[in-house]
Length: 301
Length: 308
Image 1 (cartoon, each protein chain N blue to C red):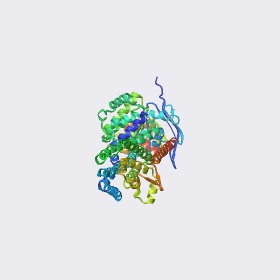
Image 2: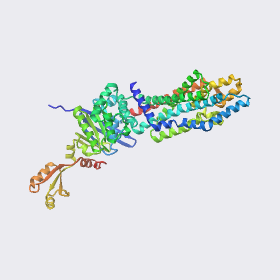
Image 3: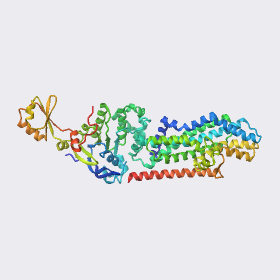
């Protein structure tokens, strides 16, 4: 256990001390922030107000800002949980490139401990970054329009933990076979550039074509984003409902910002969303364990 | 009465193939406890493959590896505790401090807390790096980094120290320090040193030498045995006329202010001197060098065999 912790501590320190790796992992949330500042917040505000004015309802500005802010916060946490995990888990590739991996495997440390240390460090590094991001997001929401309950905040933290576990498990599987810095950079770039779109953080999945939407619904990360959206906006929705907005209009709003997801026209409940995430985490973790076992067997043979 | 040292490494009929390439081919050798053992060969001769197998980094196809009385197949982790490796290139984490690097590596051998601090203090004194503990490894000079590499290899007090071309690219002062440390470890702790090097003068100081060629053992013995077996003696004659040297009827070469005569062995050199006492007034006799041995055994020169 002490060896696992020693290795994990080393990996976490390396992630935070490697400025290149650290800042690369923050590219996606930064892009998202820039998109919101430049135009996305206005787009969402217009869509939201348009839907409400269509049914003749006006809402306080604080509520509008709370809704737009909730989308921003859920998007930032959704992408950070996965892209930071991917980038911090690239240490397992970097160690092969620098030869540090060879130095570590020269010691009597168990290969399972070594494999676990990368994942545990990636998880803890990501959680640290995401929780700091979450605190900043909460401060922002408090400034523009706070509608969250304590339960919502706890649910958001649970979502971040689950999504981080998913990002860690998936990145462990994807990064495991990589052995050159070129391959590592390629994966880091693809994930940083693409994940925001794929999980619906940049643009709602509801605005995509039917074909693309159906494909994206097979990706577990989508459900994590939706869970975050639901919990970041549940207070806003409760406030809207208290203003007497009809169920149809509320459903329309929820559909437009991916709080409701449809798998081939079937509404996916939040319970199923959690289930999909947990199964995906266990599946990736299992594959990672098998990959490590196969590699260890190959070395012994 | 002195007792014969035990074999600390026993490699028997070791073979390893990568696809069509037979990297190690039926290799057998022994390393005695406390010995400075030189493992020579050009790149691709099978040195690294053998070391990687010994360290549990690679599987073997055939043969057995026994280190410190333990079989590699049965006790890989115990064997890892017996080995300390200084790689050709530093493999420490450049973004971490020296202290963090050594602490994290020591923990992998189960060395923590007071035990770690005690060992760190011993190594810092031995390798003179006490003032570098708070500095990032990436910011150290080549020589300073080498000292930390050695400290890392010695953290768990290994029985065998494997030095994989340890002095390549080092300045003379650090090279001297490294060999002083190695000498002290051998003297004080009877540590066995397993050396691969491209520098033949380092191999000449070894107790025993194995030369690999094409994955096979090409020659082995003490430097003296190898020199006697594969090279002759050289007599350098000063202040003589070339015609008289030529009259000896043995191969020679003209130097700037002397002639160097090649003879098969020391007995032949003695015979030549005794038969021509008037010619041998000012002379030197020397054995061939390890470079000559290597060339005679493999037909190849080791890259980097000479250095400034």
